[in-house]
Image 1: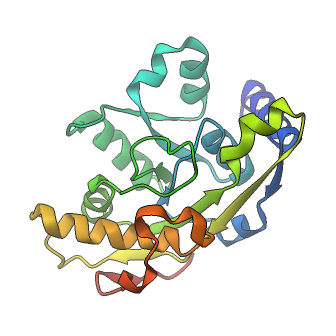
Image 2: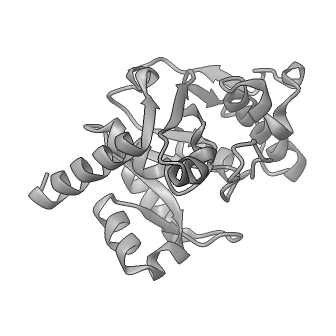
Length: 226
């Protein structure tokens, strides 16, 4: 690690811990070895910096909308963190190739199936790209839920710290025999991944996935932790 890398991460981690009361005890459940997709909900600008710095020494390469690189500061930061720019709403072969490189090297790639920030913390409908990626790459999925960060702006105005909670589920893997060439089937599998995130949240945040009676595991096989 370079001095710049260490200084940037040290500074950001301390800023996030000053602004937030970070409940990160469940990050000990994140496997320390092996490739997987870290699949989480997305609230606001705090999510990636907080998760990234608190997961170290395990590094995470996040799939990030390519428009982020139009901001010079954000471009430098995500280049430092190994962010993967992705074109939203289309099949991005370059992003797919970079994701494969990270996973083949045993790394973690963070993906938000919602595709955009919720801002409210309430879970939105997931998009199917994540399940296609997981099956094609033959890697497991680690569901992660975050909540509390939606209050960051109001609390900053009041000079109050924001409780930020991180919950980590169990590794799951999509069965290789599940056909994902059908749009309806892809969405069904995606919804079951989203239910894995929803069950980690308090009820008020579950949104589109509030009814956990719709949850089942027939698309998945348990994945052994490293």
